[in-house]
Length: 152
Image 1 (cartoon, one colour):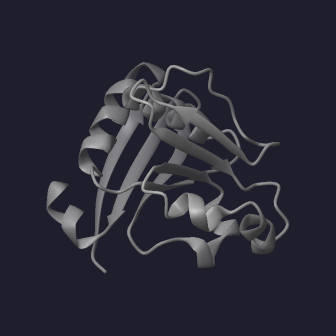
Image 2: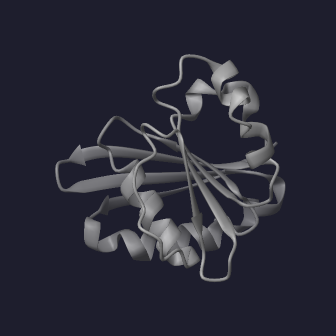
Image 3: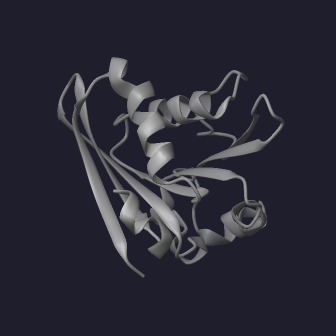
């Protein structure tokens, strides 16, 4: 598998919608996205921006306690937002049907994917968010799929 990477530096809250649009354009065909970053780095905030760009009009929140939230776009497509921070092991992810969601061909945005390593498909988009300054983020996107390599 070939990976390609793009980095956005000094991203402010005001920049998120623009960056979300660019990320969606870069990873057009990939539906499984993994979000890495410390607690409070802005994973949920970026996922909300991505959902808005996809046409989700529902109220969006972190699925920290529910583990998964399902949203609908204006066109009726499902978007799944996972937060695996609170699961104890991969068995819990299997129990809620994570495999079926990942195989659904719908967008699946996953926070704390390191909790479910054996469930992650080889074709995915990895997003790493770091906080070099309190008001700015660095967002690095890695596309893990041969088809997407030339888009970055």
